[in-house]
Image (cartoon, rainbow, N blue to C red; front, side, top):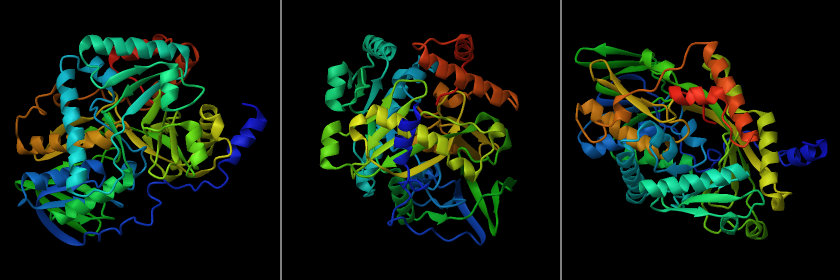
Length: 472
């Protein structure tokens, strides 16, 4: 990258605030009071992101008389649920390719359940009046290299052959640029119904309001410190009190699970994003984007990008940073060298937008597991259930995970609990220094594959065979 280009691109970041755009909202609700004293309930939900909020809401829908308490260590939606790109996908398996590779015999059922889950989210948005800018506009996976265009066409033909291409359309270079105009776009695969765009923080805040209206007792700034058996139920200690509950749903995702043996199944990977100022009518016309789809490119180190309700462009992805030892620190939420890199990539994709400024730049941790999609389980003789490992595709899938946890806590055999995806867990990550070394080698190999026509080296092929890997 030439120094003059670097200066031009980084100048676009001069006024970017180091806060998530979605959370920088004057309508952000005040937090609920912290728990002080002792509480009792039928169901305790630990975690106030999507996973916990959906669990509490669905628990009250299933049984309005059930006493439900939700604990959140900071504020509802402040972590991954308020920092993501706002892509709400039907896929429960981190994309059809990953699901087909891992659960080929169940993929039809998984796709059906995912579609029903997205429909249910759309219905909940309407029923509860969740003001979250929900737009079911779909997503285009775009090719920016010749080998990617060939792979997209081959993948589309494979989907057609398997009867899995309903609502999916292959776009050649002219067709994809008619949808969104970038000189880098060579082809696209357009999923017209399987993805919605939304304001992620507003979804979390709306779910919290819905929970409160249904009688869920929500306590914020109340971290759960310890979980232990208590008589026929469970007890959770907090800084200023405690909760005794018949059943507990752990929805803490990347944060340390209260069931210690679960911790080795996830690692934190930091992802970063930029948000532009609102585009003018002329700038928007220069890009096209008349159907407001979400987009992602087909590289291993991929970007995701979309329009907000006020016509800003969110541009994120590419770098995926794993800190040695899986440590999580506030300073990892920002990485100026990644912001500069993303700005350069943005103007390479959309040179017609040169001069646009970025108003926000932020990052956050994703709970990654070795199969890239959620896993589930129980502890303490079925009195505790957990779900984690959504790997950046949890905006929609967390609602499905909430249903799974409630099924498990009820001891019910359902079409969800009978899935191999639910019954089996991914391979855990090894201890350090092996985890860091393996992830670093995988990232290097993925970048090398992007630069060499998609060719996967011996390391990546070995990881594929073992069912391990790393997805940026």
